[in-house]
Length: 140
Image 1: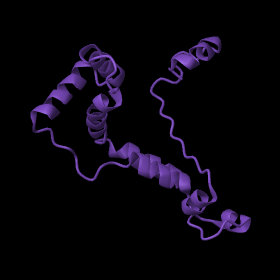
Image 2 (image 1 turned 30 degrees about the vertical axis):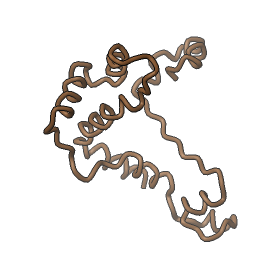
Image 3 (image 1 turned 180 degrees about the vertical axis):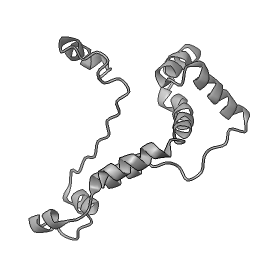
Image 4 (image 1 turned 180 degrees about the horizontal axis):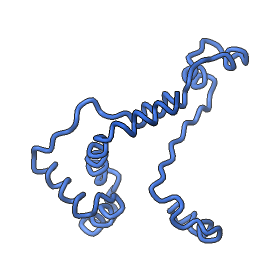
């Protein structure tokens, strides 16, 4: 909702700040094959789909937000630099990106620049296993 194309809509309906810190996950099942796989079926008959016990939303969420099996150790210069930049920017990726845009040339692919910061922040946030467990319990 923070993109330029949505700005007028957000202002017109007084939605400023309403979607801050909100994450949207999307699961698109666009083919019969994808539907069969997500429901664990061998055919696409309506009765099979309706009788399926599979929970594709729960499986998708578990795959999307599952904690890593091992925490990443910051024991080299690059990792230490990344952690310092995150700390300097209050662990806010928007602030990190703004700072990095000042330091890199125009035309730089910022998805690649930001990837190590996103990974490091995700690793730091994975320490809250209770949140993950509660989310998965609610999806069952």
